Length: 167
Image (cartoon, rainbow, N blue to C red; front, top):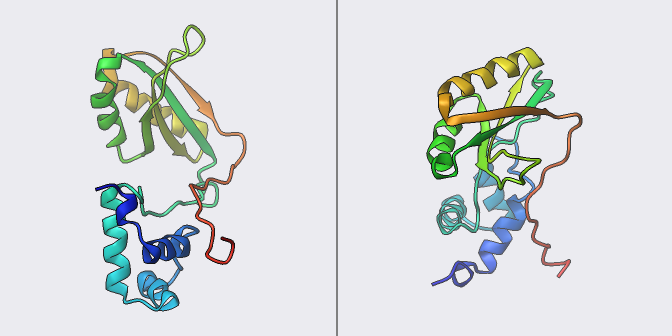
């Protein structure tokens, strides 16, 4: 059965109510449930189910790194063997200072990199130290790397459902 077959009107209302973020309170799922006229357990169970189906990919905090004092934000990019990028990516992504890590296609000859890992630091020296730790972990598996630093904050949002009234 497809994910669409499991996505009903109540699921749509829950996703629409949470897609902009959960309420900042002690019991956010209870607040969402109250606003929708549902039980908190039903909201949490439906979100778990939607996540297991892949309809909802992730539920988590999205911090503003700049507000937390992390002014240097560097996307480290790595040239690793394609046959090992999954294994190496899992190892790099497990580092406590890597906020996200993923594979991207190469665009040779100008862009040889296929593994991306985001790191944040209070300054570029801290980012360089963390990138050095990734380099140590990768060892000879890394054939080269670079770091691309953020120059401004972009608003990041995922897919948004239109509300019922917007139809």
